[in-house]
Image (tube, rainbow, N blue to C red; front, side, top):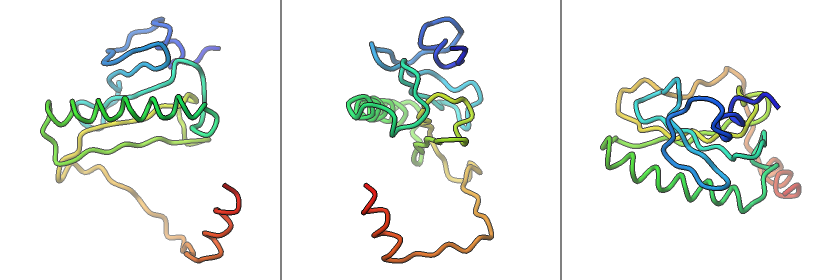
Length: 131
């Protein structure tokens, strides 16, 4: 497989690593939203969170907590964001969790379409029925 994140996990490409164990590796994002922007990836190739063993997903969450604590000490941010895109919105094609410090007026934000979305008990029930 020619996945750039798999190569990082195998130390076949340059990355500035901040954490590593047998199952995950974490490194500075090469195109950071803010200084201290870090990615956590599983060493084994997965696209989406629902493909991964739950133990691995929990482990990634545990590592994210340690990284958040360090970001708070190092950068004293106003907050932080955690973000993970799935499916076609995963631009790398390998699961990766973004963690980055946030500041008032840092200009990072969500954009919304002009589409009107419904909110209803039926929508919630459909989701619940499929969990």
